[in-house]
Image 1: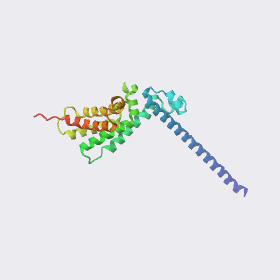
Image 2 (image 1 turned 60 degrees about the vertical axis):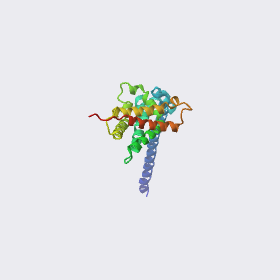
Image 3 (image 1 turned 90 degrees about the vertical axis):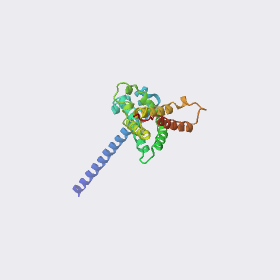
Image 4 (image 1 turned 45 degrees about the vertical axis):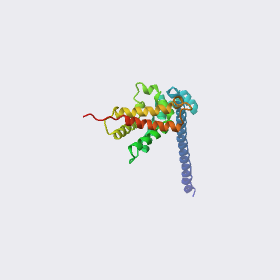
Length: 228
């Protein structure tokens, strides 16, 4: 009888050991995830506030970790910036394109739709775009920059195709250039809204509507009759 009980006791101890090991592993994973989340949250806030001038020391302090931990997880400040600002912008813009370039919508209506929604999108992510624009590391000699955002290139391609369908004639300004000009127009109006549009000029709704009309007029005015 004693010999029969012993295996069960050993088995119980083994089960307890496995459960403790599994619990320790889960806690370790949670701790790692918690650290990563805190670093990303702190980095996002700092980069949005100060652009690429934000320091890893400040990020680490806000996240409650050491700089050594920060670099162990991300390797460099550039990687941290890419993970917290660059990649999310890419994902958000790709989602925007999927949602706001639906099939079966009239081209003029589609122009109105994406221009209006683009203003809202850029307003919601203006901090991230500001960080991207003023991140010198990404503007000067880096292989990762604003022009390297895949979804932004896709936006330009779709916008250019839309301009070509709208005009159906030879254009004064090449559609690929035209769509970039309209994008930066919307971006500038959103990012510098308080500076460009002081109180009394127009309400936010009026400014938004005027911007949509402005781009529609620009598309219409960009056409010219084909010669010959």
